[in-house]
Length: 170
Image (cartoon, rainbow, N blue to C red; front, side, top):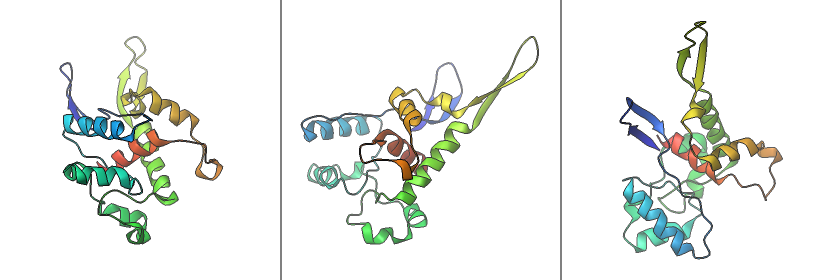
């Protein structure tokens, strides 16, 4: 998630540039590919801090600079988060943070990013932020989203959580 340049257009803000979605049998395979993606885009990962193995592996491989430290804004959202910060990296997930993530996603997809006009009638057509999302898996998750109170343990919204954390961090 970052600003990008297109050859055919102006600078584009707030664009999802990459995501890695996998459930490999070997978690080290996931780690290696995730770190390669992070390095390729010169980015850093903001992970849930309960994903300790990923954080510890980054430290072991001297890649901890690629893992985002716990952001200060997390204390605004979840004031008692300090008790859940077992490491200086990542964010402690909570229902309040999930609500903030959903609010950020709704704002992003519903933002009018530009308006076009019909050449014959002059009628305006608003184009919304959702048009910036090219990730089909993320779009499908948005369509399947249930309010937190209606979610079951089987529901998986990892793409939405990741995308929302990127929005909140930007």
